[in-house]
Image 1 (cartoon, rainbow, N blue to C red):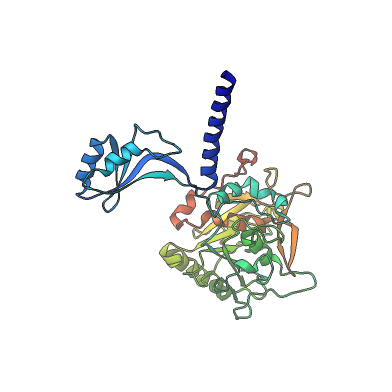
Image 2 (image 1 turned 90 degrees about the horizontal axis):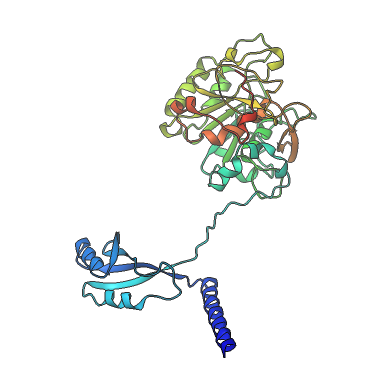
Length: 399
């Protein structure tokens, strides 16, 4: 007899668990100890009814609907509590009441790690905590970036999805198409490579992924020809109410002898951008601090990087060392990862002729990787900007 009762108890427990599992699988949910109640007479009447029946009122949901909780009822149950429900419904002022069920809901925009073939080689994204930012929804969506350079291969399979014609122009040839001029040595690959670092599409089976893979990306072709004050000013002022961030990885010659900077029109373009661009928030100009380290060049003598209107970005290598080409100066406001010595890893990005490269080098890499981090800044915030990589302790102080 005892064995029979044991078996019955076991079967009973099994049926309870089975019922619970069935309820969860079918999405029927679990009853909570809260009620939604429609009560006529206002908030004061709702408070009276709640107190009378042992409820705590959590206030209005909206209109005459109120949120009640009963601490005498278990918080999670397979079945509703009939007694409390019936007594509540018996009140004349109660039009409707329903014990609340915990529903199963799944996010439809969850983050999964990119499946792009070169993504595992993008070591710098891990160090920059980019995956953690992506998981919180910061993927560049809503941000418009343009690369001021030698053009952008707009039909590249890893850029086409995010390409923005309204953030693009060919200043050199004075037409809307920023497609680079192709040469045997691929001299005009720089802009396309920078664009891929910012906004190469994710999960498309091509190359790697951009640090802001949902950002819109454009390119201004302005370095493949004579660069004058007019050329620079036109580039810096292009569609300033549409473009949020202008990225530039160029400047005066890094030979340790040249002191140069923006002329009258470019200075005016900077000023108008930071005061009127981006809907009054101010355009953001992000600038590479220079490649003249071997020549003992100083970015203090570069009128673009030391301008009050630009955010000057320096670089560190995979192992946290100061690269051989890096220039140290007081205008540098932030540091991010770039390539280093021959024994250190380089950067994965898009390349000309619809190709991919894993050997992008030197200062051009660090400016694009910093861009999504400054989108919401106003010019007054720039001085407070810090980039804190995952292995920040490895980075040497170079000031």
